[in-house]
Structures are given as C-alpha cells and as structure tokens.
Length: 440
Image 1 (cartoon, one colour):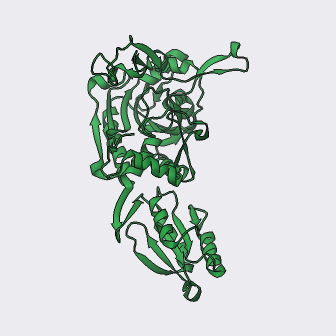
Image 2 (tube, helix red, strand yellow):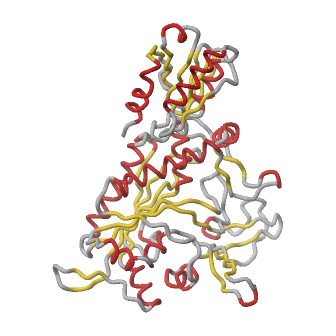
Image 3 (cartoon, helix red, strand yellow):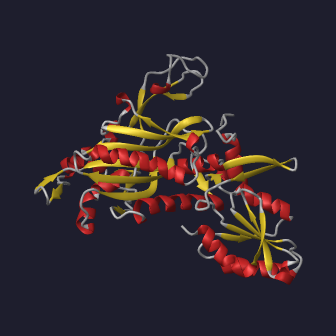
C-alpha cells in the first residue's frame, strides 16, 4: 500500500492499521499466512457492513413501491455464464516477465518491457477470471460450474418468476445483495479490489424508449445516496464512459468515483444494459423472457438500467471520508465522523469508577434499558479519557458516563463524538434520547 493520501489526509496504510487494531477487518486465515486479497470482517466491520447494506436495501426496496428483493444462489447452471458472455469473453490478456516473474495485464502496460525491472515479457496469454469448481460427489462425473462473478445474472434468469409472482408492471426493479467471486490478477489497495467481494445491485426494467430517462434518474439518485449518508461532495464525482470503454452489452455507463487514498477510482457503476441480457437468456435457454404490455397489447424485451455497487468499496469510502484528526490539548484525537445510521456502535455506556459496585450496576442497567434495537456496549477497561478516544476512533456517536454524582441526582453525562460537548441528562430519559437520535 502506497503513501497516497485521501482528501481526509489519511493514507490507505493508516486505514488498514485502524481496521486491524480496532476490529473492523482482518486478513483471512492470518495464522496460516493469509490468502491474497481475501478479508474477514471483524466485530465492528460486520456491523458497519450490515448498516451499509441495510441503508441500501431501505432506499431501494422499503422506500419504494416499484422494487422487489431477491437472494439468488451463488452456484448456477453453467449455461448461464455462456449466455451472459462470461465464459467466452470474461478474461484478461496477461504477460509474464521472464526476469522477475511478475504478471501484468496488457492494457496496463505502456511499453514492451517489464515496468518493474525492464525485463523481457512473454507472449500474451488469456486468463479467465471466473473460479471453477465441480458439482457432484464423484469428480470424474461432476459438472463443471463456476462461482458467480456477479449477482446480476441471478436476477435475469428469475425475471419470469418474479414477474409472475409479484404482478409488477413496467417500470419495476429487482434488488439483490450478495457475494461474488473474481480471480483478479491485479489486486491490492486493501479491500478496494478483492477476489471475494459483496455487491449491491439493482436491475431496473423499463419500456424501450424510456430507458434514457430512467438511466439519468438512477445516475443522479445513486450519487445522492452516498452524499445523504455523509460522503462530502468534493470527494465524489460522476464520470461518463467513452464509447471504447463500454461493455459489449452497454448503451451507456457512468461511474460514481470517490477520492480514495490512491486517487479517484470507481465506487459504483450505472449502466444502460439495453435488452441484451433477457434476449441472450431467452435464446440460450429456450424460455422467452418477454414482458406483455396490456396497454399496447404486445410483448417485448424490456431495457435494463443497472446501478451496481460494491459493499467493500462503499465500506472503504465511508471509512476514508469520515476520518478526522485534530489536536486537543496538544494531543492527537482521531475519530470517525460516520453518519449515525452507519456507526457500528450507537452508544457506549462507561462507568467512571469500575471498582464502585453502585456505579457499575447503574451503568449496566442503562445499557440494558437501551440495547436491543441498536448496538450498545458497556466498557470499563480503561480510564475515562482513553475510553472516549477508543469510542471516537471507531465512530460511536454518543458516550454515556455514570459517575459518583449520578448516584445522588440520577443524572449521567452524555458526550457527543463530533463536538465533544457534554450534557447532563436524567438517566431515566436515555431511552427516549436514543430513540430520538436514531429514528429515521
């Protein structure tokens, strides 16, 4: 990981160290030396990841009446990937250096020599990006199948099922989150490019001729979603693909780019996939995946607008953008100014003295009264100053401190993460306070 800095002034190495130190992300199977570009999400990471997906699902499904949900399987009939074009064209052309043995994609090279050592390169070879496995107990008779490289095809092959059971009319969409797998050659930059990753995808089916209107709508709506959850306007932008960049199925495509520590890079893509996918699956499967328009009394293949984002990249973007560092009484204070809806822990209840049973008991009661709907923790493992810094660094919006005076007046100190302002409040009102602060 390089020393580049984001607009927040934090490097990728600092973010990775924070994630390891505080329990956001660990290297997969680390005790065995790990495995390249595969990561485990720890106690805090799994909460942040869940909150990102929950907010996406809320905006895509719960806040709308024209989108249904789906959870398609990872393993699919291999004919699926022939129809989609992945078997025939989902590959990179690679060369190896004869001297240092490093491998490079042809489209990333600027000359005819190895960019690392100047050595001679081999002839280009095709490298398929899909992971292959076997379906069946006897390997000789097993069917070759693939781990899905994207979640979209599970939606397309279920188009008729969803249409028949939901009774939706155009325009309507199908939303899905889930794991995908790509045997990436160029990995790195922490969780930015992984071999196992999670996607948030919507396939929005529209009438041909109305596709451009909906395409523009989803480009703007998806950018606004990130901004509404705290990403600063100066750190996010739209980039339209040039014609030579477009995928074989795409009429047009925009990337939502974020200013990561390594520079501007893709956060999410919105593509007009035309009617390519439904036509292909109809042709290969023999099942006609058309929509019957009652108003026009005819059948046709809908066009598809696809907003496709990565959970892992969104995770990295929200962490990077929310990172703050400042001097407080000549000491560095680092904190994550995460939107409250995304914060892994919503409230931390802290006893000022852990050796005074009455304070501990009161703190536990407060924690028990407000936990359940939100992640609330009790912590007495350090002095109060260090506890505050710990909660700041993981993005906890509020700390509630129980002190000696609390035993007399029934009040606690509520501290705000961003401003560090403190307010005395009746302990009995904490439930209502938390409900108000985190209500949507």
